[in-house]
Length: 241
Image 1 (spheres, rainbow, N blue to C red):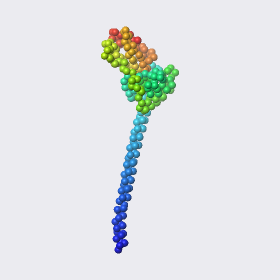
Image 2 (tube, rainbow, N blue to C red):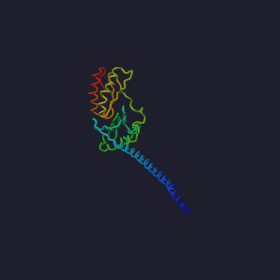
Image 3 (tube, one colour):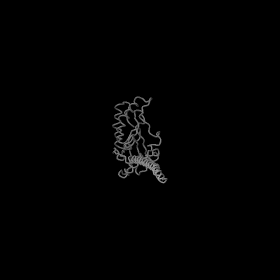
Image 4 (spheres, rainbow, N blue to C red):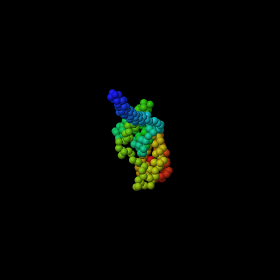
């Protein structure tokens, strides 16, 4: 009789012992699902970061011919300087820019010019674009993927030479306005730029940059087109120097 009672009690206790086991199993399942979810999130973040890097690494860079056969205009599809311009004509000056420094390591590079949204590369007479282009593309893509600035110090950027100052005479104000609104945009389309250096004794002093530097057709444009325009609108202008 007593043994039957004990068996009945044991039968009643067995389900009670199974409950904690089920709870532990459920807990393990929950922990496993939580770990799997966390792993998936980490993998997703890593994949997203990798895809982001690949997107920059495979950025589409357009090239455009310029009037100067020794200069090419590279358009990365992202802002370069945003505004203003900067030019580097040797290895020493390129130390101020990580991208210019990297580009000057390519054999045949003679000049690097940064515009608002483009990069103009000039080569020496012995350089061949067919051999240089792949290295130039790689240098530009690597730079934008790195997140480094175009120049180390923003103060190294050329200040706007066409900013109208309070003490500028009326003719100087008109010269700067014409250069900024009518002349500079068309020159930048050819991968170059023009810098205002002063006005004295009827002579407007200008400096060509980028692809326009050393280009014979640009010099003709400077003398004929720009000079005629400035003389037409501003009687005080006699010539361009």
